[in-house]
Amino acid sequence: MEQPRLKLTRKIQLLIDLPTTEERKEALDTLYRWQNRCFRAANLIVSYLYIQEMIKEFFYLSEGIKYKLTDEKKDESGILQRSRINTTYRVVSDRFKGEVPTNILSCLNNTLITLFKKESKEYWTGERSLKNFRRDMAFPFGLEGISGLSYNAEKKAFCFRLFQIPFKTYLGKDFTDKKTLLEKVINSEIKLCTSHIKLKEGKIFWLAVVEIKMEIHCLKPEIIVEASLSVEYPLVVKIGKARYFIGTKEEFLYRRLAIQASRKRTQVGATYAKSGKGRKRKLKAVNNHNKTESNYVNHRIHLYSKKLIDFCVKHQAGTLILLNQQNKIEIAKEEEFVLRNWSYYELITKIKYKADKVGIELITD
Image 1: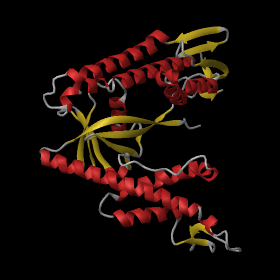
Image 2 (image 1 turned 90 degrees about the vertical axis):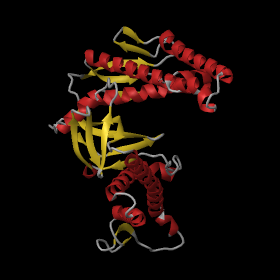
Image 3 (image 1 turned 120 degrees about the vertical axis):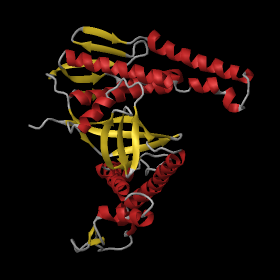
């Protein structure tokens, strides 16, 4: 039996590897143009897909009309001149031909069709609205667009070309597995899949997607670990009659409130700060606090979720149950303080991701 696989996404900052400022600016402008065309193409694709599905509603005044959303050459009842996947691709490729690589449009089209099929039932029941894409959306590209991925010892970075634009990675103080994963991709130990490029405030990020084999652990489905999220402790874990606590209120909540208070004091003090270069100078200290809280929370929930999954693996538990989760969510919605400062949703997301990675079945009560 083939070992199950899992896809991981890693956010890696990229630098344009060109010698002059003018060349780097031109390459960056090209990336922003591709992003804009993908934003427009994505909205067109989902609109066309929705209209195709709604054609049967347009025929409600007529009787005896038979149709299928297939190529008329393959089926008598077909009403399309080509395959359904090709219809939306041709719409965007004809409109943006020469402005963006066709590989990007093809990946975008395939991704949106898969997503549309997955969510279509919720569209018809009115539980979900049709997607509307933002101008700063990440755009996808396939393996055909990337070439020459290798490690350059002189530059101390991984280098490659994306549609002939040279890039090098900037990993900084990497305490994660990004470098290890890229080395495995170069050595063909793991597979690189369709990935994305994200542009934010003039910076370029590569959302690299790799396919790895799931970790194999000797887990027993009959061994069940129960966990609950509370205000006093981020995670309360129970196995058999034993109870364990992961994190404390003082460690998580009070530290988060301290960061918020520090930012508020800084905002008040900014009124009396030396202006120098105007608004930017005055808000320099405030801006330094912007990501402090989110970075702290993100690190903590990663730590809590990892400790929980490691606990399950240590005790060979193949099943993890989150108890009374719906009740906790309702309480959090009613209590503004709890909803603002206790990251229930983020913690659940991290737990689910890490449980899937090691093959633990997660059940939300």
